[in-house]
Image (cartoon, rainbow, N blue to C red; front, side):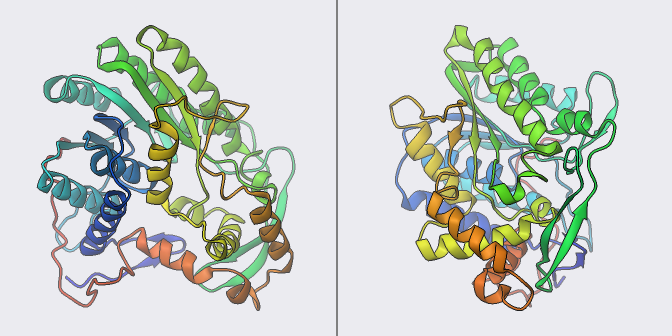
Length: 397
């Protein structure tokens, strides 16, 4: 079939398998170009199919020469209907890993569930024995709690007062004012339950109980802080409460791993285009301005550049991992440089529909968005007939 991007609001309903494969190959080539990392050798990535999770898996495999197990929840293809992009990413990753002689297997299912945790534990036991790095990179809007059965939904809302500010429709370039009503009863608690650290802790507890964590094992989850202009709706809103919980969980996990010398960290990463961030008011406008400034300064990074730098310059240097005063690894350091933020803040005041194409990088934002779904990659013939039915070589579902 000929696969084209089909949009519904801020959601792309289709994905391109050849484009997704090109995305994976591009990331692999970047990691290989940066040299060998003396890092983890047996890695579990929870949330391994897109974004930072996918880039973590690629960096582990092609930077550290590691065996990887990836857990994700993706929609497989059916005749006449494409898979979700993460399915195609994972298929391409496994193909490239196996070509390189690397162990790579995947489990498709709800990582919040007891069943998928148990299936993952059994695969580790059977195939690789123990893991020395666990990446936790889930980004689901809903979670069915494994103990209560209650379905919790996260929301992105300010706390206390209505939030009003600029935003942009990146499809049209129209800048407008938007208001978001504050959180109501239960919103904060539900968001923390979905996006906080409870499930991360459950994974680590389950792995440790079965003696599947190697001595000195490291586990990492990902977070974001961002600038003042987004903090009311993000870091000081419902999502921020969940991130606070996630960061606090790192300390409790570290305490639980003292007997094996293990440690847990939260890495604060850079603002990047994701399907979720594209639907968050204010964020697309901020990112388009940020991209413009960071590209001009020569410090722009995508997910793979971030993860490769995280591994090579922070996690595996042979020295203690550097953290801020709250114990967080700061890979957002280039984004949050004073000079970068001052320039973005000045542009924010100026930004409107008429000048955004000149003072921002809306084109770069749009390209990154379509890239998420395998579209707009150089060297891919999007007019060619492609087979939407692609299998993940080792899928366990």
